[in-house]
Length: 75
Image (cartoon, rainbow, N blue to C red; front, side, top):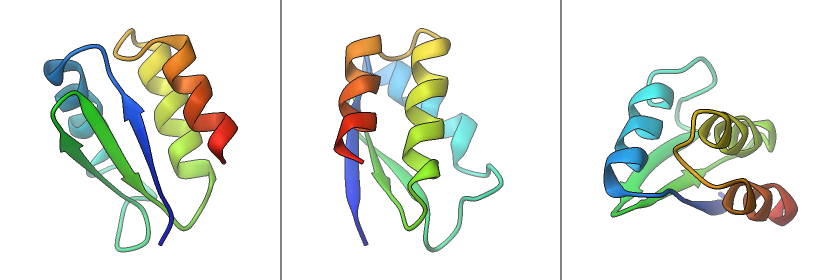
């Protein structure tokens, strides 16, 4: 399964992103999130999953726009 990483501003910000998306519709065996320090590790089958997470994290101020853009560009 493909994996991408979203660098958040702090470990607490990564925790907030995980909390928002761990039980989110679309999460499941094919789309998961986990934390590695200040990084959110996103495993995905559907490319919309990391796109939605990166966009949400940037909009909420948990990740910079450039960090979200790196995730989106990698897709």
